[in-house]
Amino acid sequence: MDYDIKNIALADNGLLRIEWARGSMPVLAMIEERFEKERPLRGIRVSACLHVTSETANLARALKAGGAEVRVCASNPLSTQDDVAAALVRHFEVPVFAIKGEDKETYYRHIASAIVHRPQITMDDGADTISVLHADRKDLLPTVIAGTEETTTGVIRLRSMERDGVLAYPIIAVNDADTKHLFDNRYGTGQSTIDGILRATNLLLAGKRVVVCGYGWCGRGVALRARGMGANVIVTEADPLKALEAVMDGYSVMPLTDAARVGDLFVTLTGNLHVIREEHFQLMKDGAVVCNSGHFNVEVDLEALGGLARGRRMVREFVEEYTMQDGRRINVLGEGRLINLVSAEGHPASVMDMSFANQALSVEYAVKHRGTLEKRVYGVPKEIDVQIAALKLASMGVRIDELTPEQRRYLDSWSLGT
Ligand code: ADE
Image 1: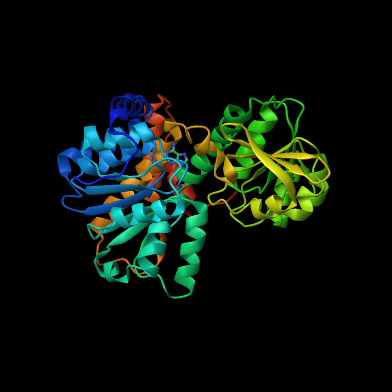
Image 2: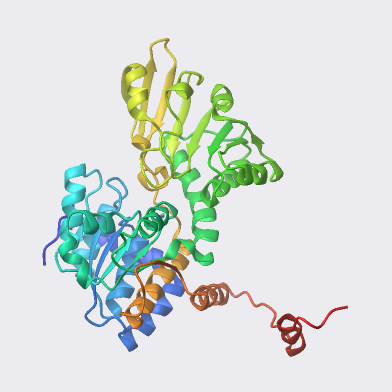
């Protein structure tokens, strides 16, 4: 079996972490058990370009249990858990191509290695495999049945490919399932981003002015959790609806040029580029901390910051201090890459349980419907979403009400009124 990982000797530690995560992934475990019996993915070749974490390892196990041949590569050069990568290779015989800290050339070489078996399903977190297939490996496109996409950023890209008529195979937008973005993006990003910032810096959040750039589901989660730890949260937005929601959720809302003067800690989660740029760095206080939790490392314009700085040095493992011409210091966390996966462990397993249940069931759906789906971006079927919510509630021991026949009739009718 071919693979490229940091160190196979880390495998036993990785196995412990995979088992620990599995304990919080009951929905995925149930799917795995059914897959093992029914083998709905028998012989299906899957290339999964995901953050290589203990949660992703459990997804790979479920797909394998369903009969798939899975190859895994990283969806970010800094997010790989090297012990988990080793465990996947040694204990689960999954070829993995991922090393934490890999350079750009290695990152793309690893994607190339993950697609050598001519994938029938691509699974992405940020659409990089899909981009590579469409740009450089068009020869592999005809055998692809479908792809799945995990993130808001990736789905935006794929919808624009669909609009431009260049999308070569059907995509299921896992991100858009309610059991994905309402939980993973909000509670997962909310908690893990704060976790990453604290592990990197050991800052006290109480009393700090935390500037959250972007009020999508991820931004909402970070704002909520930062407020919960006593920070004064400022939200910046370009979308009037989201800005209005932030105002009514009780946050201060202002342009980033105003927030830049007062913020202690800045977090970008917009999916856009150069959100924090030269004009903002020029205004920041001495000691300001800047990080990103959006998918790509383009939200903080580090090139501009480098141009303004007279010096830079690492002051902690994931903290780089830039000294400006006037002596002010700006601290950048994790090279502007997703801080929740760089200095922490990403979202907790309990929330990835639902995201990856969506992935597993979407792959099963795509395989079952092969040949009937168009070259479009589809949502996850509603029945799958509702089934995952029901299973998650059951796993938590939470029971809910059932509609009475009379209530069902009322909801179905248009003639019953007062
Ligand atoms: N994205 C965010 N958190 C993650 C995790 N723990 N595993 C895989 N992908 C993630």
